[in-house]
Image (tube, rainbow, N blue to C red; front, top):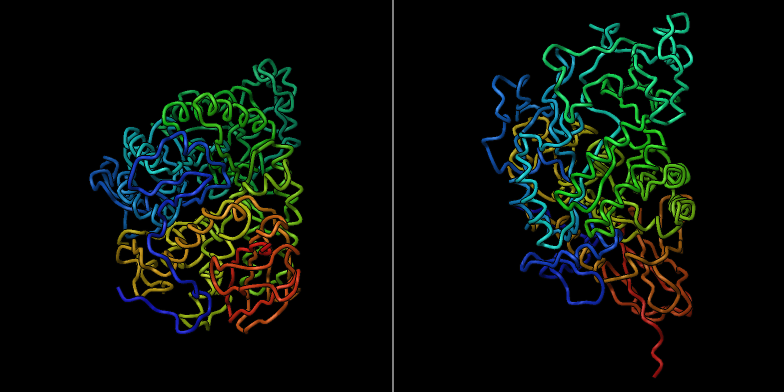
Amino acid sequence: MKKISLLTSLALSTAFLSGCGQAEAQDGPIYGNGEATVALDSVRARLPEDEIIYFVLPDRFENGDLSNDTAGIEGGRLQSGYDPTHKGFYHGGDLKGLTEKLDYIQGLGVTAIWFAPIFKNKPVQGTPGKESAGYHGYWVTDFTQVDPHFGTNDEFRAFVDAAHARGMKVYMDIIANHTADVLYPKECEGKSECSYRSKADYPYRRKGGVDGAAINEGFAGDAVRTAENFAKLTDPTYAYTPVTAPGEENIKVPAWLNDAIWYHNRGDTTFEGESSRYGDFVGLDDLMTENPRVVDGFIEIFGDWIDKYSIDGFRIDTAKHVNPEFWTRFTPAMLERAKANGIDNFHIFGEVYAHEVDPGYLAQFTKRDELPTVLDFAFQVAAHDMLTGKAGTHIFGKLIDGDVLYAGGEATARQLPTFLGNHDMGRMAHMLDKAYPDATEEERLARISLAHVLLLATRGVPTIYSGDEQGFVGDGGDQAAREDMFPSKVDVYNDNRLIGTNATTAEANFDNQHPLYQLIAELSKKRKQTPQLRYGRTLLRASSEKPGLLAFTRGDDDGTEVFVALNMTNEAIEQNVEVGINSVNFSTLAGQCAATVSAPGSVSVNLPPLGYAICQATPQDKK
């Protein structure tokens, strides 16, 4: 396919080297190159911040087995969930296809694969006319089995083994907040919504409200999280009367999950206040995670996946909607289980959705909830606001200054997965198109390239959303951002104007010559070769309250720091910027770097519009 080349120097001034994504001979972490099997011990020795993560929805990546497209379920799309022409149904991607494309993923420089949940889901949910399928994996009915749309447990094992053999880690996406929508309140039957009923108006010890009959005698409330107390909670009809549809009474696995007593049963969440932890997330059955039986049950469920498949980490969905005490028991149990299997650097990161550059909000979940790390939504907001011109580059300082707030401080901040967009909020490319609707093709490519430079040069664990490396844009969030990598039959995907190519999503998009694929692969290579980019402290060197220059260094002032500069504007920038006093000469890792300082502690930055520089300092020659 024909590529759209940059006509200016802009942001792709880096000369790409051959062999992108190949392992380098070096001290430090060992990365695979796909040419030889890598010892599993060397993979497990890598720290979380040594990784570059690739997030993928298995259903939308590659169809390696046509026979499992309908999961063996007879009928149309409302039975099997399969309709490759509709963005809200299964399209056919599976574990076999994902395994077959490991060469492509590894060539990008990726060292860890995080995929959306692969547990068996309820195929279809939704009120008449608003149905959609569980292709995304978040409507679980069986926590012990791979969804047959994706393959089998044996095929999952084969995928993990194949990834490990290449030196790549595997992170599972797990859910403890809810299951599929099986239970529903009898009082809301036929209604599109079911209002949340609070603990004050509908206490546990009265049936259907404060004036109802006495039930659950002696139950001391969910704050007393003991088996003895919860043994007195026997009647779940304090707020609503939970029922199940005929034929779904025993649909969940393990079997204990079919009992309504293990759920809150209070109606739909408003995402605010009490309902944020007790309400049903868009109707999904909200688990009573205060109950020690539920905690024990999920420790058993997810610990079993570690024992059987030797996975390397968990991304925890909807983590902030679960009570903190659940995580303070669950997380240590998972880390202990992993260590018992020889996995000392098991990476756990929770989803704590946020809309502000507010590290303190995220940090509370690493302290009170004791989650090891969380997805860095503060980075995403800061990146968005700088790149779209919504805020000045000074906002980056607010992000970095907040690193000390996390449990473990800056060391923990280095392990936060950072990202530009995702399958829920949408892609950064779409956000940039909205901000700059008149941008030329060259400018579109330059802007999204600059975004990836920021991602791969900043502290944290860079996380690429599959398709970003092929210039996918999308039309918004959720289903509108979940395009197929294999040839798509979805019209609203295929009319998208991709970046850096004349291709569309109607054809396969696994092009390792795409300029964004090439850029990410080269930056990934440099990151692996440069310890400062993985472990170095971040020091803000230049910023402004308006869109303009962002400059920072990674590492200590020992003459080997890495200097990073990004021009967020359409105008060239020439400016002196402070660097460490011991930094004298610079070698270019990416972009355009000055060969030496202008004076001790100062370097001249000259960047074209939307240009960047990543420069490795060397100390004064003592000859």
